Length: 454
Ligand SMILES: *Cc1c(COP(=O)(O)O)cnc(C)c1O
Image (cartoon, rainbow, N blue to C red; front, side):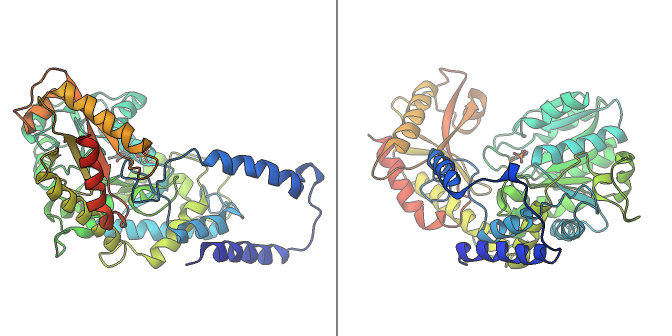
């Protein structure tokens, strides 16, 4: 699709709709001439060059990529009207679209009857899940794996709940024996499991942890902010297929969070939280003197902690899902390419004398480090940081990677022969979330090898 054309169409269609309400005089206080605008707009576009090329396959660093053009066109067309999904009065059309996409997300996880809404981020979505968890288990804490997202500990602080980090196993997943020992103390009311850790994409054994819920009467919340859409590859044929058990088990958990602004092709400002029991909506109950006039239907603002939310975010996701639905044949194909890219790179690294694989990738994130002589944490750290720097600085053929700090214990669990002469090291990390990465893996690998042996 030609984005330039469709952005023009977006503008035309909203202008035509607007014209139906009759002419009015734009206020002079808002007037900006084209000449002045040109000057400042040039300043903006100039400043925007100070960015990394997130769109390009040579960018193989963090979880960053531009949205799909359909999401951009959908967002822009809607933003020209600027509906607010706080209430049906604020954006009737986009509030309905939000309901529809939330239903699609719920179906993707196998949730039947549910309560859910979009949020401005995964952090806020997780906060909402933990808020509901606190209301249901007052006075009891929250447990999460040591590799869980850092915001869980923070949000426990915000909510005034005790946070209990649980050690990780040698694959970066929550250690179930350690979790059970903690649950036996009776101090925990909710367990957060991660389906795709932010660092390396490790998937907690959700299906096994579910037995603990009945035994200890805890809630189970799944943080699938990053990994959620990979459920589309659960049990799929081909090398990209994932073991189905943990993903299928999400349907039996109490709540789940997924970020369409990570793997759902959306611009930032799009997370989602889903609850399996719709009656938890009662914890959100409040009265707003400003809104809720036009209908007795549930307003989205009545079931969310945030007030104003971009209707444009719902519209962008809605339009994207019309074209690339959250199914194996739709969005699944996009994720499959990144997954295959990670597998291919992991194989190349395993065969390489100059780079070591940190652990086998479970999703589309690869962790690796240079084979230094001697193999010691301090040397690995130093060489990794140098590769990162040199890779970006190359004027002709740059590569953009990221680093991940791992502690000495985590490294020793995977690579016992490495000398622990420091309390940790930065390893290299590449999130291959663009399907275009698949074609580039041999080149990325060759570049990293060349940088490692320089
Ligand atoms: C990204 C991420 C978050 C935080 O989401 P934001 O949208 O960045 O606020 C939480 N948990 C996991 C597992 C994530 O990957």
